[in-house]
Length: 365
Image 1: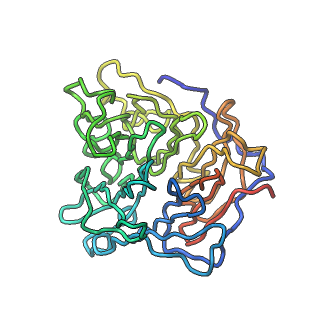
Image 2: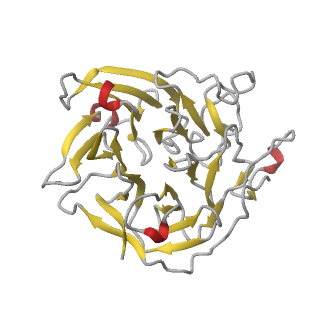
């Protein structure tokens, strides 16, 4: 495999003096899976609830309750959607959201089961009311099973929309999606804000691969983010039975699943041709956690010791780590129960959502 850096295992013995402390403790959320902010509204934080709502509050004056922004429970609460990896999974605001009112969501729909990426618009005159009839479905992808939906969407520094797609679910990628160039499952996709394909996508002239693909060979890229200083794309890919991995995504890169789980062989006999596969930047065994939650490179105020470090966690074990993006040194941080996502506010302060309903902020302890 082509290594970006040397891979380190189990180097989690150093306990940092930094950590995540509970914030906005008067607020609670139902199964939060994302926290983010909207361009042009620096004081607001938005929290995505998997059941189908987005709520927001003013981080400078949070008050006693959050305010409902978006509600799609009539779709995501459908009784046919059983399984813990479906629902409302992603939210991204257009870079010119303050002017055009456009925002994007990633959700699971039923009958047939499918991932939907849609664009919505706010009502005019500055009202914080979503026009339900404004939905424009940019992408629909049939889902094989109820798990491995991916779900993350985010605008990159190039103002393109990136979409994380899991391999279709079950276990071991039984339908061979991640290495199937014509399938959108098991991939990172890239679209223009109107849903069209950017002509500089890596495979637009390759008849063996779908035009939407930016990178492939992924199992379940639950959360990814862009370094606000360098633009680098960091992604946590959930493992199968043994290894969780962190990747730095390159244009057109192949990250190996299901030939490899992390850097270890999984189904090597299926590999044909001389495809170049990129190793994880970092990986850890299931003795330390069973479901990686991809994080954020910290560029915010107040915690100088972790400037430029990539912070991530494990949903099952609650362990939290910081990875030096230059040396790949990793240190342990205090645990957070069921960390489901990491996100930033407009100033770069770093937050983590606990799936149990709370928000936590990175601080110097």
